[in-house]
Length: 164
Image (cartoon, rainbow, N blue to C red; front, side, top):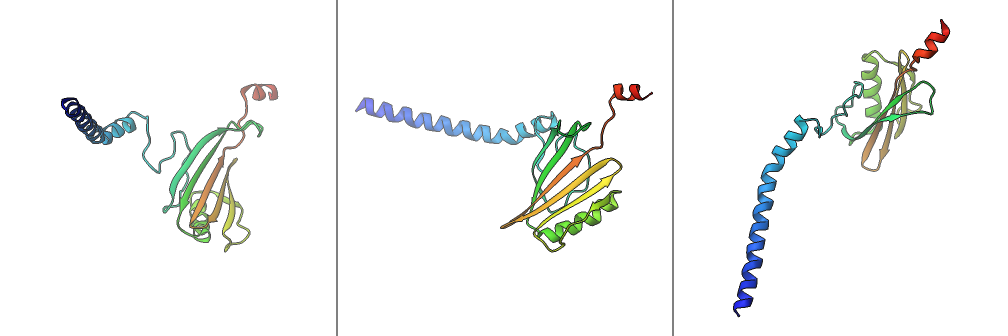
């Protein structure tokens, strides 16, 4: 009987210590997250990674994914910037917003959407040698917005010297 009581007491003690540890850690999680954000280890929600170019983002969109991609398939382009957002709004509404706001930011629409009422739209903008492609796809209950930012070709130092 004494062994059974001692075993139960150890289990209760273990549960109490585990619960205390969980509550202690949970209390520190917000502080740990702020520390990581302030030291560059974690970024706040809906914020692009460091190094991304700035461009207008649809206001009712939530950032899902972004990446900087080395693209060896395109001559003289070192990086592409891809970002994916989701929104509850319909594709035509989002498309209209991009058509207005990207152009106001100094871009020229080089390829307009084929059908302004479609649930799948693609628009291409140019600014100097840079291309920004906005793809908008409505999926059941959410609209996915993909921005593909491709800077213009870079001239290598040795190519410039050869031309002179």
